[in-house]
Image: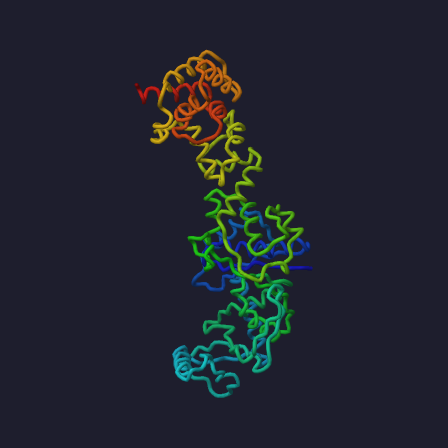
Length: 461
């Protein structure tokens, strides 16, 4: 059975690089009808934050990625790690190192002056003397002294590291807390993780973790190291480029399905296909197809995908989504006309809300360029005739309003622009927007008359 995991540290929010890693792991587990584990790596007790943990869980909930079983917290597993550290000490595969931080610094300085690579010199590896007093030791693992550590990476191919490049690295700090590379290997083995898909910033942690697996006789998983997401200039993604809290995307009006579709295409592809439902992603995804090179974040691509999903979202769901942006349409009798008129034009739910407000709320001012362009010639007589005809008729649907515009055009022998421009300015305060017949049907006959009369009043001859 394929078992994957996503294991963030709760020292900050979940950003989109992390979410992409989670998505790749989730897809691979679901494709193989396996297990997907969410593990919070909170061993760094000084830097952990409850808010960060909550932000990670909220983000999973929002995008709809489920996980199997309870969330695992490393901070609740210290007894397990202690047991394995003791096992390595008992078997002579790890040892206490009494070197102080000051001694280590001095050693590094000397090595650098001699032009050597700074590293621990293994002075306590086979130590049998009396330990120095007053020094709390760390525990170091005995790394192999010769040969190579070789593993097959599902994306990058064969990776080989010379043993001499690796230190006897620390597996427990002087206060007894275990270190990252040790606990990751223990947890992945005990949780039965078969496939580790993670960012390639972890590539050089892998040989250290393999040393831990081998020292304890644990099964080594398959590794896939995913290239990073870069900005459009090919540099590391910063907050300004989009590496922000996943929940910020919700606040900006992106749909979770658009964000997941966007992320799956950052580094993975299936022919020329751009739009994938979650079900299609599950069916088609294979980590072996992940690109070997870094992918570039492109906001206009996300906007394009988001507008596609908004267009295809049922109005009922849009009504609920708009409430987060201060637009309440549940009891509005023309909500279908409103949403059908706007959803093809919006890139985000936030933009959709803004467009809806521009129709539902009376304009507080008029666009200057629009005033110059629309309020000339006999615009006043045209709008007065339009109001007169509208007052005399029943009008509810877009066709009713359109028929009245046509009557005015015919009677005055003018082009549609001659009535359309001043009318649009009266209704929306600006020259762009959806079909005027839709706008009038949405706000209704009385509000239409009120807005036209307000423009006539504001621009008296």
